[in-house]
Length: 236
Image (tube, rainbow, N blue to C red):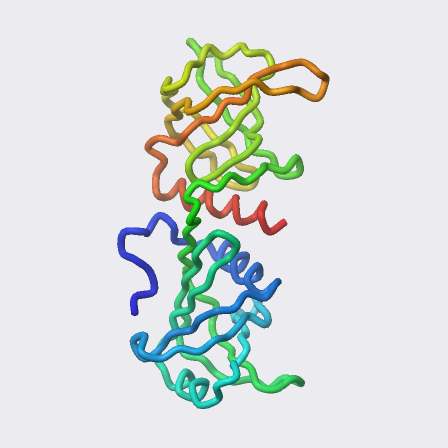
């Protein structure tokens, strides 16, 4: 069984902090994980018990099927799949080993080098918190640029509030060379297409516009950076 589809590389997280964040989120509930081994012919149910990012290890429950657990220990690799909210998560663990705990034995493995995470509602919008704001910059004429705080983000686009209605935009307009600034991460450059414009009531009682902008030509690297930021604000 492959650990991820070959055509879905843009949904693969490889930054260690992002990988650990996904594992911690799975262990927080905890989510039921399906672990496949022996080329997918066998499986067992497990769950993440702890993530030790200093040691670079993840701990999992052994499961109730002890015979399957023993065979999993002999396998060269384990492919783990589950669902986190509306996302499909998949990763590969190398060889497992057993550790003793007060509640009984548990599996340990090295933290995976990557995690595949696909949001099934491909472009599920995440509100952007004030504590971790993202800024969207749209070029104007000449040296002019328009700056907006992002209200929500997804892998497909960004929502902004135009309080003054100063930006001359219409649906299907394409704005080239826009910049999305994410706190603590590199800035992303892409073109944006106006998908929707709606009236928006501001906090002071005045009326502005909410503008929904879709990403165009966002690179695979940019998608990975954005995915990591979304993971961070969802797990905060």
